[in-house]
Amino acid sequence: MSGRGIDPVAQLSAPLFVSWQLTRDCDLCCLHCCTESAPGKRLPDELDADEAMRVADQIVALGVPYVMLCAAERLGGAGVQLKIETNGQRLDDGIAARLARLPIRSIQISLDGDTEATYARQRVNGSLAAAHAACRAVRAAGLPLEVTFAPTRINLHEAEAVIERARALGAFRFNSGRLMRLGTAARQWRRLEPSEAEWAAFRSLLDRAAARLAGELELCYEPFAIADGLAASVASPPATLLVLPNGWVKVAAALPHVCADLRHDRLEDAWDAYRAAWRGATVPAAARRAITDAAHLALANRWQMLSVATSPSRESP
Image (cartoon, rainbow, N blue to C red; front, side, top):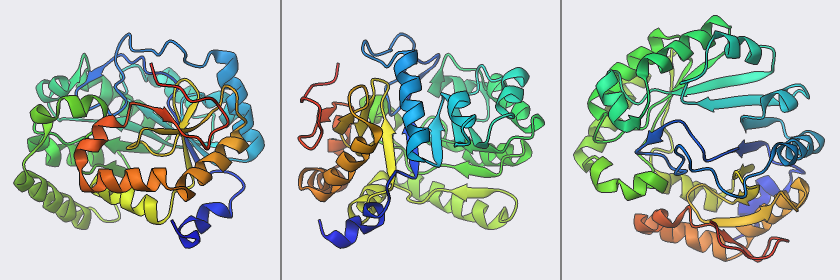
């Protein structure tokens, strides 16, 4: 790719944003999960507590300003702004009060339905009442709330109600877009994928709601499709590192390529490897293949170490 495309990140000594998935063990079995998380799905080589804290310290030392994760207190105590992504099943008033002592940029809670029946079909083992209670606890603690909605054939009929629910719960932002064909969703695609007519209707609904709620609730749904996001990354890679539970660093959620291993590599070296990956031939070519043929997205979680990394090549578990 051209030097022009890499310039924005080439000028930065550190990523602006680190998205860190601490574990693949989750209390829910969501049909649309892009990371394939579920109960008992913890990877055998996930970072232990000491290793995770070492990575957190490197994030602080390198001056990363914004992190979306879960090792909140070590990073927050050092002044790093935090975004917490959660299903809300265990977030109560006590946890919200604890988080309120940290520099929280937002708490993002998923509401994938507006009735218990619909929510439970998509978020298996989940309770919509618990998610709503978590939203209220976040707002009661004075924290900024974001609501995320993953649209599928199961829940699209409740999209408008979820938008209104987000507004009523005091969210400042509603996040959505076309369902990503990754992870569990890729395996369940025939069951989950709406028709093109349904996608068009959903897009129109978002446009109308964005205009109607302007100044009250921000609707974020661009790029609408994962292909659009990949195309933007090819043109200008984001200043973002995606850290997996075992410390591996991916170049993009939609691609399988890993550029570093934070169990062995320094964060600054991982940042250099990430930029080198986007300057090379392999990653942009893979992105273009995924843009033109969505079937390639099903390979996103079959992690592959790139030769630009300092660690030996390995296959994911």
